[in-house]
Amino acid sequence: MTQPNPSTAQARVIADELHRHGVDHVVISPGSRSGALAIAFDEHPGITTRVVLDERSAAFHALGRSRAGGAPTVALATSGTALANHLPAVVEADLSLIPLVLISADRPPNLLHVGANQTIEQEGIFGGKTRWSCTIPAAEIGLDLNAYWRTTVSQAVARARGHGARPGPVHLNVAFREPTVPIADDGRSRAEPYPFAIEGRPSGAPWQQHARARPGGARLSIEEGYGLVLAGEGDFDPVELKEAADRLLWPILATAASGLRGLDVVTTYHHLLVADVPPILRPDVVVTVGRVGPSDRVGSLTSLSVPQVQIDRWGAWNDPRRHSSHMIQADPAATLEHLVPAGDSRLLDSWLAADATMRSALDERLGGERRATGPSVARALGETDHDLLVTASSMPIRDVDAHFVGGARVIANRGASGIDGFVSTALGAASVGPRTMALAGDLSWLHDAGGLVVDELADVVFVVIDNGGGGLFDLLPQAEHAPAFERLFVAPHGLDLHRLGSAYNLEVSVIEDVDGLRSSLPARLGGGGAHVLVVPVDRETDLKARRALDDTARAVCAGLS
Ligand SMILES: Cc1ncc(C[n+]2csc(CCOP(=O)(O)OP(=O)(O)O)c2C)c(N)n1
Image (cartoon, rainbow, N blue to C red; front, side, top):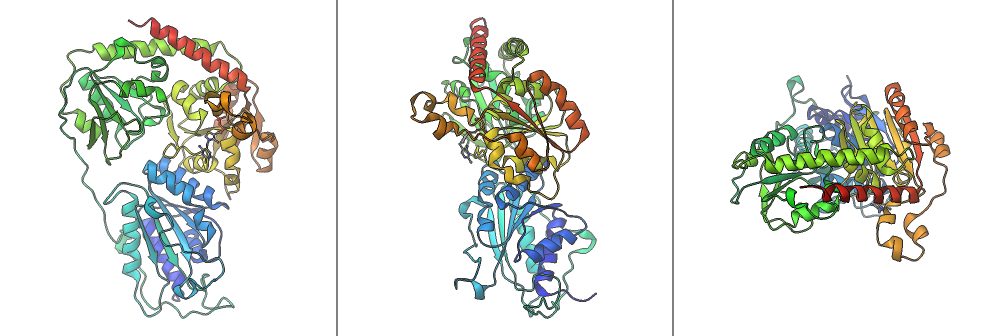
């Protein structure tokens, strides 16, 4: 076999070493300088490539896959503003601790700082938002760089997985000389063959192995008693956490993204806390695990004058209301193992009974309503058998948190709570393979319609609540007090989402009511392909439904004793 040119050698080594570290999926946005890597990834037999035009979408696509699958995913961008478009996904990956490898192609040093076309300062462009960033210089004919390339890739993946800090995004900025196609002479530039060996370790082993000890539990100095666990999204084993809470006879209040739904946990806390904490549900200690949201009402629990313990494996400072009395970096379940169980199951029984009463009251109210609203749509999704629900920011995640009951895993980009990158996150997540539904508002959907410009769409059923703009703002003070409220905040777009979806070659249906949604979902999910179900929702009706649900909740809480 003839030796490759230097850029091809460098690209092949990087692709191969990434694969040895578990990377099997690369999201590529087209470009010339990144060409050698695009070709090397595509030719690697163990790597699937997906081509997404818009780099902002591409990075979210990679993020969605990493979030759903756990392994680091690569997004490849060419030089210039292409790379800058990765920033929103980097921000989300940073806050959500998602392993993500951003790779950019750069110019060799002789083309930097001299006004060369499409050339910007790329090194460290994401600042402190990456766990690690590194520029790999262009390959030199006279240097044996195999071990350098491979150890650099090893370190990048290890750091993305949390080696030395916590998981998150890393950036490899890789300079290439032309030719960036696998020949010696591309008609514009010539290169001698790269003379050194480029093989990796035998038997497909990575150049460097990484391992980390699993953290144990911390011992808390608190007065114990009737405690409860408030569980959000975090790095813990849901089953172990549940077992630990069961042993203590403590209830778990589980947010939709906690991974605990489907176990015997409290899911109606948003409504149980509609007017402060009912006296019968007051704990002696609150343990918060992971990032808890989106319901603001948990603030009434975390503001109680009892020990407020925050436990996070990576030492994240999840204390938005500044209520925590203890910040613990340890494994949450193992930490609970050190505590003494409550004297009896009084608090646990009260929460579970209140939860069951509240759920049936909410169900009864929603069950009698055929018109589609955010809550009734979220409830209907929970009734359909599927594996993964990707949920957009704004009202979808709030409605799923309050009304989605079912065993499907829920994921959402709540690190920075952006409405950007949603379509791509869902497509990336669905590429992992589970039967996937994705719930969005119309603005989130439109924001990332560019994510549909992809060479192959994963199987996913998008449910888009079309309330003609941002319904969230109806619940905020702007609705009452802001001039030009509709235009400045709701931002009605007046677009026909059916036609838009068709333009992207999607199968689109408009669904008139909740029964229509219920009956449409199973066939769409089972049939494969990408579908969009547009559900028109009237904002006034939606608002009234939410108020009625809160009235129901108040009545239930008043009856708790
Ligand atoms: C990238 C980004 N831009 C702006 C916002 C502010 N924002 C929060 S919710 C929202 C409206 C979302 O509308 P839609 O997706 O239709 O959902 P709905 O509010 O109707 O549930 C906006 C603009 C944001 N969170 N992220």
